[in-house]
Amino acid sequence: MRLSLPTLVALLPFYLELVSGQSSGSGKTTRYWDCCKPSCGWPKKSNGPSPVQTCDKNDRPLNDGGNTKSGCDNGGNAFMCSTQSPWALNETTAYGWAAVNIAGSNEASWCCACYELTFTSGPVQGKKMIVQATNTGGDLGNNHFDLAIPGGGVGLFNACTNQYGAPSNGWGERYGGIRSRADCNSFPAALKAGCYWRFDWFGGADNPSVTFRQVACPAAITSKSGCTRNRDSIDQTPTGPKDVPTYTPTP
Ligand SMILES: *[C@@H]1O[C@H](CO)[C@@H](O)[C@H](O)[C@H]1NC(C)=O
Image 1 (tube, helix red, strand yellow):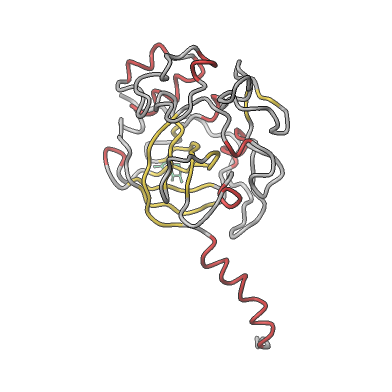
Image 2 (spheres, protein in one colour):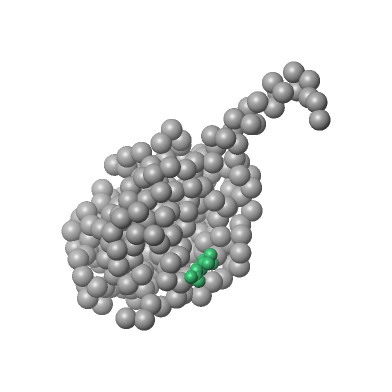
C-alpha cells in the first residue's frame, strides 16, 4: 500500500499516540485505605460513561451519578466501597485498585485505566497485580501506585473514623497503617479479607517496587468498580469473566 504524503502526515498523530499513549515503565508503590470517595468517583473524570462506584456510610452503593460530597469533606456521605479491596486469583496474580500518578499524564488519561504491575522487590518479587486507577493523591510522585489495602494507613485524609469508628489517625500509623496480621482480626467485617490479603498473598511486603504497563481492565475489576474507559491508546474492552473466585493461600 502506498499512502500519499498528506495522508501520512494526517496519520502521524495516531501513530505517535500508539507509541506513547500506552504507558509503561518502572515505578514505586505505597499503600493506603482512607475510606474517602476516590477522585475518579466524580463525574467526567475518565473518558468513559460512569464514575467509580462509591458507597454511603453503611457501605451500600450510591447510585448518585458521582455527585455526592466525599466523606472526607465536612458533611459528605460518599465513601470508598469495601468491595474495592484487593484479592488474589492464584498464587501469582492479584487484582485491586490504586491511587495513581503516571509521569507526564493526568486523571483524564488514567482514571479507570488498568495497569499490570510486576513486583520487583521484597517477598512479592515476580508476582503480578492488575490495578485499576480510581484515585490520585497530592503526595504521589511520578509512576506511583498507592495500593488500596484496608489497614494500609489513611495518609493525608481520613474518613475511616467517621465511617467505621476507627481511631483518630485511622488503624495503626497514619502512613503505613497496622503492622501485623492479627491487627486485622478486629476490623469491620467488610474490610477483613482485604486486610488479611496484605499479610497472606502480599507477604507483608513493604512498598515494593514495580514495573508496569497499561492493559485493558479485567471485567472482574470493572464489574466491581462500575467504571470502564472508552477506547484511547488501547482497546479498553474489559477482558475475561465478570466474576473470578478468590484464591486462599494455604498457610
Ligand atoms: C493466575 O491467574 C492469571 C489470571 O487469570 C493467569 O493469567 C495465570 O496464568 C494464573 N497463574 C497460575 C499459576 O495459575
